Length: 223
Image (tube, rainbow, N blue to C red; front, side):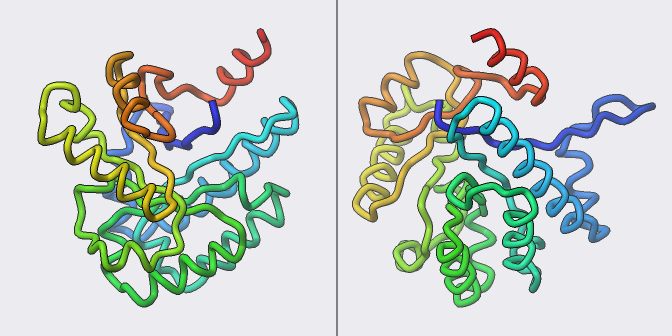
């Protein structure tokens, strides 16, 4: 195991568990998504720092960044301030942006990714293969990782087209000195085939379902 990805869940006192697919679009509509995103970023950084200190480990944490958050003029300052307040090493933070986010303003994206790179923060293109990224721009981005979308992994074993796409993304990434993460891996067979194909990091229910931080601490406490 090399790291974690932070996921947000809303445990409502009356309505119970509200999935992000319900409240995230609403937050994007009413403008609260930046505030929520910044809160998640700081809380997640603080918690992975505490976990690493407790375990004497060096795990990294991936945090999804919304398009609204990414284009906010204070974004770089926010990231820098969060790192300063939490004491997390920049290399232990990976920010994930979608392909859709990158193409909305190419020049701005190139500049912002370079600033994050100078801070020492890792960056990843999430759900790669489903959006609109031009390969001409990918090579200009100061990114570290491509994350292959789950839709390609679901039928990776049986669909030759999906397998060809996955293999191509892995080769492309490695030729650009990028790491590759496969999302949504749910079986041993998928994991083994992806390892054989050269995938660097494998993520999904095969290894762990999403769990609260308290459970992670409890599990590590046993070992």
